Image (cartoon, rainbow, N blue to C red; front, side, top):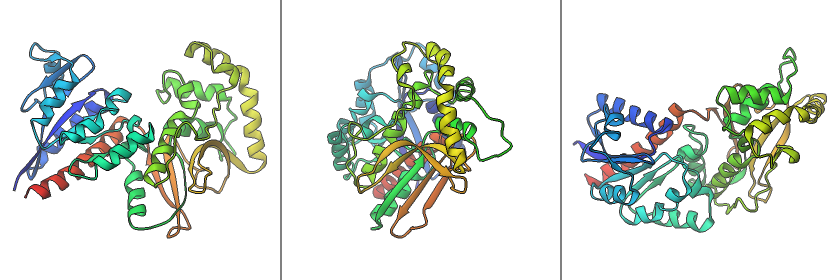
Length: 361
């Protein structure tokens, strides 16, 4: 029996466009579960239809039949095409705050947007309550892009395992920077921290302003999400976060000025790195979830034999230490990028399709 699930996509940027491409490729090779895209919207324009063309959507979005962006109209349209998943590909906080109202209208939600799940505890609790009913929320790609991190954690918790500690390198940017700056390879030439950050920025790993990575807040949001999924009511306002941006550079107005002045602090980072080397260790910026109260984001020294020390490129790595897994369960792989993030979202859509499709039979 063929089942069709409708999709309304908000934010067809780099990740959103890749998600649409993956949907189109899936449609070409699968018949049992069908997806019909009924809406695509960016910040300026939107298409509302019974079936948006997945081959011409970019042209149609700029064409005469497109409307000015109006989120309330899009949601009305999505709700009229049940069952429907709203796929929020943005990082917009206002959009995220609307999720409970969308669930009340019978819509499902899939998103990489961290704002709803790391924001106020009241919003988190509201989403958990509402998504326990017929409407579902999946957000695997808020932590580790396409890596099965949240689904693994949920399975551990739901099966009654006891979380002892969750520890990980959750930022592809910071992974790349410290894997290159603080290496276990004895033949690696010493690098200046500012040069490593410059290369990362030029290759597109960092945010336009690298301080938005170096301040630890992206990692902090992921730690909060993991903690909450594990049943720990973490909050950004109370989570200890180590900001490795030198205090003198935090209030400099522009990214360009920050990058120009960063070399003045290379000695500071070199000293930290040399101190780690003397102990046979490397530096890694990690997020920690500790049920006993030690949750944090901090720069840590790891022995060269530790799995975190041998990480390569921009990979993410996470270690779950539990009662059943005293030797940590480790997940490692690409934790950033459009293809893997869209894969994580698509996997969530398939989960909803399975649940809704089964219920409709």
